[in-house]
Image 1 (tube, rainbow, N blue to C red):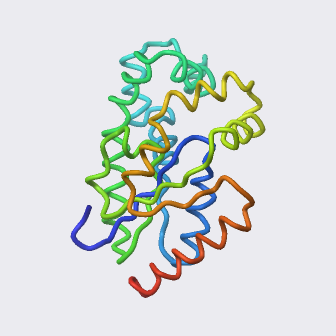
Image 2: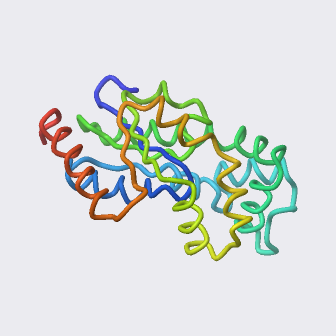
Image 3: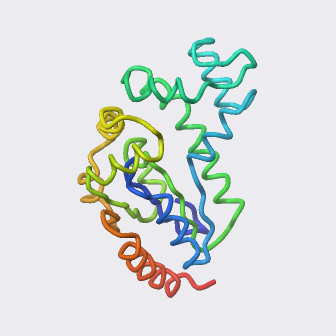
Length: 203
């Protein structure tokens, strides 16, 4: 957390719809939204700090001939190999955290939303003032992952299993929005929370 901004961490699980909820909530709050996945992607561009860290630790294994990170191959191994996932997380999470906090300080807004997919797994809950968990049932998440990424149900299930239980995350959160059903239902819940936040943190 920072002295000048109230940070609302938005998290969930793969396929729960946290990005859609975060974007809509940001619109209703008129608050900036920092996408930590986007920060990570930037960090892993050629010659950036994350790229350098991975190249040093992993060698050429997950890199294309032109030097770019082979994100598809790396993602596959992250879900299949706990050792590699923990190694990559240990390298990238501190860099992403610093990038996030630097951007929060640069923005200097009363309310800042930060979308952090692995907020609890990375132990970043102490960096935010409140947590919103976007929840969805496992079946709905599987279908979304399969449709979005073109993977099998087995691969979608493996991706879900690689993360902390969404029920456990919801139990620890300050706010929970259930995105298991129609988007119109979710939208109503997001608008309600957005209105409450807008009253607390007027622009």
